Image (tube, rainbow, N blue to C red; front, side, top):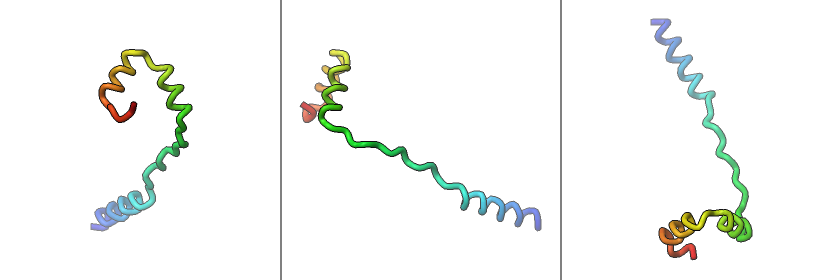
Amino acid sequence: MRLHRTAIVAATIALATCAPPDDQETGSVDREDLEQAREEMPATALEQLDAGNASYR
């Protein structure tokens, strides 16, 4: 019984002290970055991107 209680306490402490990893911080993306990324894409990828999202144009 004592070993069972010790295992439960140890598991509870382990779960309480383990925190999830922090989210990756992302910076802002401006229009120049988007235009540069589109310039570097192959033409076929741009066609598929534009066909799949008409509001992007």
